[in-house]
Each structure stands twice: as C-alpha cells, then as structure tokens.
Amino acid sequence: MPETSFQGQAVDTGPAPYVFLVVGIPGSGKSSVSAELARRFPLGAHIEGDRLHDLIVSGNRLPKPEEDREADRQLLLRARNAAVLARSFHAAGVVPVIDDVVVRRAHLDFYREQLKGLPLRLIVLAPSMEAVSGRLAARDKVLADDWSFLDTAMRGELAGEGEWFDSSEQSLDETVDAVVAKG
Image 1: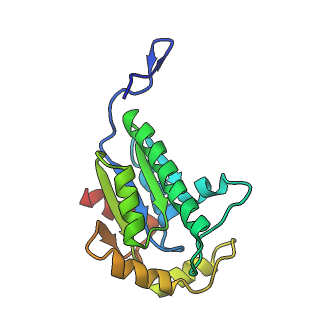
Image 2: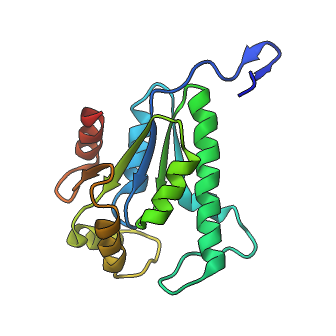
Image 3: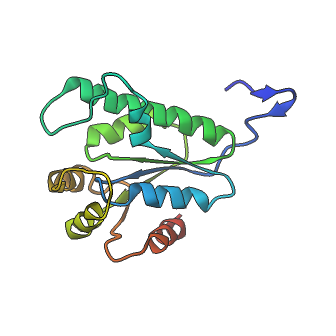
C-alpha cells in the first residue's frame, strides 16, 4: 500500500491489532455491541452494514427469503464497501468493527476474501429467539416479527466458525466484556 500523507502528516501510522466482524440476525445486538466494542479501543470505528446499504438512494433492494439477484448483489457490495473501510481504518491504526447480518456461509466467505490478510476476529452473536423478539419489540423501527428462519440458517451454516456469544441474559457491557476477554 502506498504511503499516505498530507502536508507531511502521515495517515497510516501503523496497523490496528484487530479487525472485528460482528454478525448475527436482526435484534441480536450487533450494532450496540459493535459500537461499544469500538469505544473500548483508543482508536475504534464502527462500520454499520445497514448504513452502507442506505447509501444506495435509488434502486436500493434489501435481501428477502425469495431469490432476488439484485438484492444479493447489493448485499455483497455493502460487504465489499465495509471491507474497504475496514482496510483503511486498520492501516491507520484504528480498530474497525463491522456489524452486518451474515447468516450464510457464502456471505461469510465473501467477507473473509475481502478482509484477507487482516487480523480478523469473527464474533457471532446468537441470543435466544425469545431475547431477540423482546429486543425487536422495544425498537422504534419496524422489522419482520419472525427472524427464526435466519437464526436457523446461521446456526446451521456458520456452526464452528468464529467466537459465539449467547447474550440472552447479558447486559451490553457484559457481552462486550466477554468479547474483549476472549481476545
């Protein structure tokens, strides 16, 4: 990577120790855990997959259970863009924490390819469906009521991958403490 500077000020001063990819279904706590995890480092950045997807202001298509090739393409585009940001932050010594809904092996493999060569820690948030339902009910934004099909897919396709955390009975701080302690 070429050295980056502006008026003698280096942008890339040394790599960050980690790149986090925090995955789970909607309501699993990804955004809250990721933001708090990023705050635990002297320099940390929270990269939200949903926000990257929202940058597409015309023709934005979200994934659905039925096949939609354009929605799938946009899902991979958001993953690539998250990885580009993560690489940039990592090179500048800022710990990037990506949060995204990743439940399929192919999607995870795509992320891994985009983040290849970086010190990746995959964090899988897997609270009970009862805990997820309670969290979703407390939110302002309207989402589908039943994400159990995504939970089933994630538990089947990503089993054995990364570090799994059941945050059903944990506070936000307890969950982030457990992630930090395991590292």
